[in-house]
Length: 285
Ligand code: PEP
Ligand code: MN
Image 1 (spheres, rainbow, N blue to C red):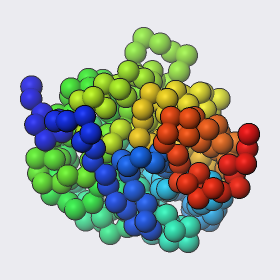
Image 2: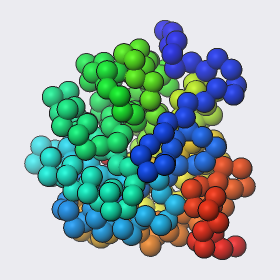
Image 3: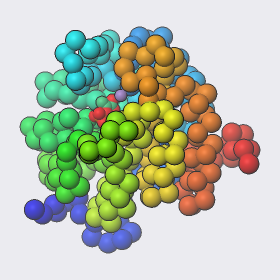
Image 4: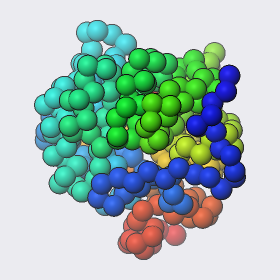
């Protein structure tokens, strides 16, 4: 099957996406997205934003509509969560990303979010993708649990062919026979996608591993393999998180791994936001 608009036609072609507060995705800089899996209260998301704002991140994440495996699990705060997320982003001067689950919610989510996230479970929800082709905000499209690289590119093509050129791809692990990790991070997908498409390629090591101890090594591997950015779950109090506490870092743990990520990023000539500014955080040897 042919993807036409997602295809890279020359090796230097790269889509760059510009965001509020002077942030961007897809340029030479490595872009970091961090924040809790789920917005649990205004206090929680503001706390996360404030604790993260000076750690080199460019975008704050937080889910208000959650695709939970069980219908009895916390489903997200809905619009109240979106209001809190936007407020937190404004305080920290960070653009915000949140998941869109349902076509009916697009106008509501557009009111508050700077980037709309399509989760792994909706990677091949073509009616949702077609509608997102008609919006004028960036869409971060996660690879499905059972989606091939070609199918991911064809899903991106649905959005692009609707007229929305701002698509970001995200490898978040695929389902394999391996049970030691929540999913299996497909590292090869990064260089393969970078060869095939001009779209920015992100990696989510949190959902790929399901384990906070693995977030650092997978992040370093992803950056080394050429990822344009990372999306990492960080919670002010992971032990009491309503969702994905096991894979969430504390802001202090994130700060620690940021230093390692930044070292690798610099080694391959892709500094993070703070390294450009020569922030003190970089005095780490
Ligand atoms: C998420 O990022 O909150 C999420 C649900 O991830 P995924 O769609 O990759 O499972
Ligand atoms: Mn999560």
